[in-house]
Image (cartoon, rainbow, N blue to C red; front, side, top):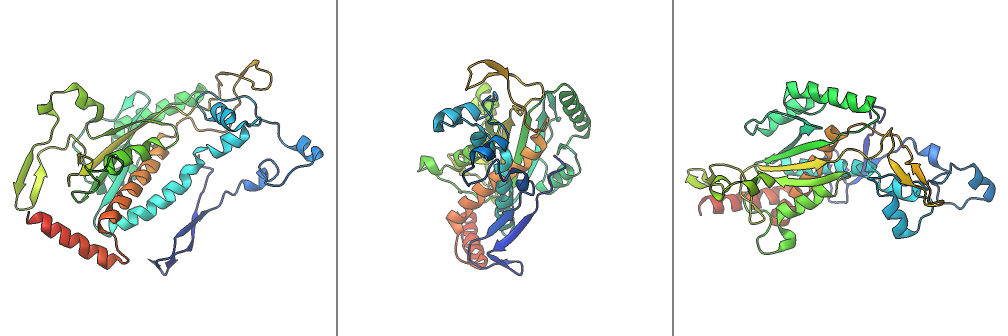
Length: 341
């Protein structure tokens, strides 16, 4: 929501614009915390203070972690669950994702996220654009969509959902270019980079699906229409197409990485769904918390950060050292070896 004005403060690890080698600490203040000191405070409350505190939440909301978390940890007050499972957790992911992107930018790797779909409105298909153009066009769109005609329809769909007390989801896409070939592993199942990215994207609140490249559409086509033919020229090896989204065998191919994530509608509705009170076992309408009608544009930013973190981790795993200069030398040596292969 626009009332939220989060700002990051760097409190360690950076001096005069450069990292020192110490851990980087990023601090984001929740300015609303003073209103919750008693409700969420660490100190035990007296009976009188407990009576003053806002009522316990005993009505789980469908689609949230409320009931499952309460059963797992035996919480009679589900605010313990809903506050910790909140998508506010993604704030720090975006912050550290920005650090990851700065690392990658030093070596020419750029990322951009944008919105493909909101509700049943789809942006028209087009050739994969350069990352710089995706950044410019998405930043100039209120819903981070590259198709101006679809953007207006998406905005109307969001307004309609809000008017009806409902919510809508959508699909976001992240593109990374200039990624060197060979990041990830074909040897270790848990180091396949496309798998690690898929896990990271799926761990974002409300995300229910991930596609790499053509994704599920590949299951509907013959192999001749899916796999990317290999070619060689003065620049080295490349693919004629990029249906597999920059991955083969769990490793990067050198082609742009293309990842999509599907976000379900936010489950907090202003026309709440039916639930059951865990104290009385009686049916009730689920509790209502402040919520957006659609968080897909924001989710595109979170997804970009999640992909950036995994890319930076894999990049440093292969080329990492104590200084940027050393990493650059390792990368240059590798690229020469690959180019001469």
